[in-house]
Image 1 (cartoon, helix red, strand yellow):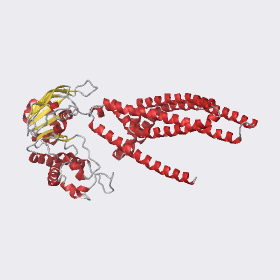
Image 2: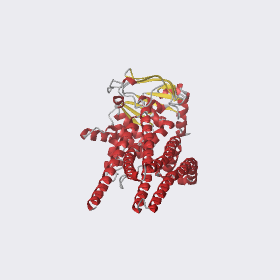
Image 3: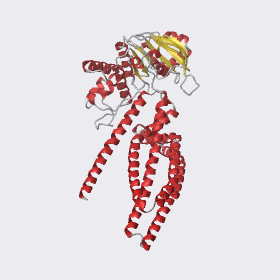
Image 4: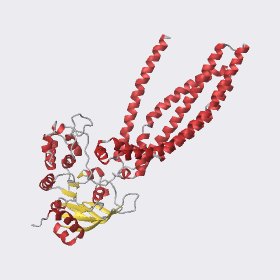
Length: 526
């Protein structure tokens, strides 16, 4: 007994260690695989609500692999115990054993039916789950805290959350309630068989054909058999649900294509860009965002794109970086169609500042070097200093508690700093300038900058980026003087092209946009 006790203690500790390590390894493995899938899949899947619902469901289903291993081991364990019970119950008679198994079948069928129904229901109501998660995020994230309090929208958000939750919960609880009631009724049948078997054994004890010990033995075995049968069913139903989840993940991986990187040509440092009759509409829509756009950006030249909101300015960059493919027309790099280039080599020649600039909860130095992490040594330091100078962050870094080693945000460091909008934009700009690229793309680079910082930024670009092509968007027309050519977009079409003087004479939209801004600063004396 002592040896068995010690072996049991050892087995429990081994099980605890192995189970914990196995779960951690599997969970981290599947999270890494999902991260790789997310970073490689086409950008359009993030923009389409239908695919994004699927993606969010996959993020939950991905953990099913670990649960499947656990349920598989549990099913084997219950099956071994069940076989042991059946072996020892032979003395009671095979009829009762078969009756218990037969009485458990309806409950197994019910479990199988409702397992599939609940999983399908979850797939069809993923959007409600996403909406509740989003509302929870809005209510608890510091970025929204000030505005919510000023506008007094606390009750509105609570009511909005409860409205979604009430509908979601009432529908799901109805299905779960039906499952619980039916399974409760079906669970009665195995118990009736057990009671009948015990009644028969008790009668044999009274007539002297069986002992009290027999009654105790069969009572324990029958109870264990029913419990093990239920354990097998629950584990098996868990495996079925996890199989559905794993299949869902596999279907998503087949459905979601990776970005096409098959082009064999490699892009050299010299890049001439040409849009030739390019038209584009986002997948699933009929509205053209870009229509019949043609222009050329020779190597080393600078083009400024202006236009009203929604004119399609940022979409040009998405097409140039091959986040999307044109619906009509061609984009040529050095007179070769863009799709013939290897995607990685193509993007290495571009450095970008996107309209919605983001920074990471890393150190400031990591944030700046993030655009070309393979740089090291003196080359990295030289590029970093140049990028900081152009973006105008040198003085700001000197004031940081740990200089470039200061963390942005307090997410992972108590001494992290929270930057203003303009300061955040400068760090993102420094990251963009740190990268060695022949083409620089700037989408509203001065949106959060004060006038002095904006002026210094464009003067630095003019003096430090002479050998690079520049492709930028600006709503502030004071910055168009940097460009060799200005392109005016209106509802996705080019309505003007040329210098500031030429557009003031020949483009009504440009003239109007210019006067909206310039007239405010013209005094009576002027």
